[in-house]
Amino acid sequence: MEFLVLEGPEQTSAYWAVTLPEQARDAFPWPRLPLAPVLVVVYADAGRYLDRYSEPDKASTELGGSDEDWPIPYWFIDAAFSAMALQLLAVDEGLGCCFFGLFGHERDISRRFDVPGGQRAIGAVAIGYPAPDDQRPSTSAERGRRDLGEVLHRGHWGIPDVRLPEAGR
Image 1: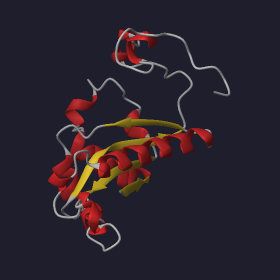
Image 2: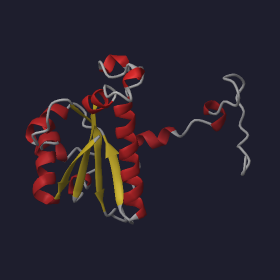
Image 3: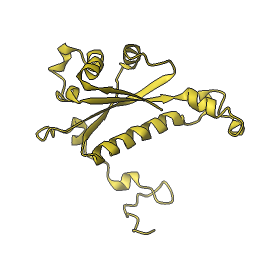
């Protein structure tokens, strides 16, 4: 994975100029998001994985030929984990953060910031200090979470089981 770190108003405003034109900002549901002092665009790089898995100690996996050789493209998984780790680190430091997608702006961002070919943006993390009065949740939060019994399957994918594992097991 790779990270494009944009710091300060000059760099972050260049990002927002590409992804959220001025005329769309009045209707944007998170008006303070473009004020975040740091944006980190997280990239996945299939080429690095293909190169690594072409090396002698990994060649027997037969995953170095093409991204189509991978049943699950781990470059996206690792990039997503790194975005999660970045957010956990930000929270540990007392900062606020928000992960969001580029939603059709990946090519424009790549051109604007000279991102080399082969890189795929999985999303961006805005980092800053949260405003105490800015607690509006996403409308998706109104849907609620699925019951634990719908997502937890013990030993088989059958009858739901809502028991939580006991500590120490």
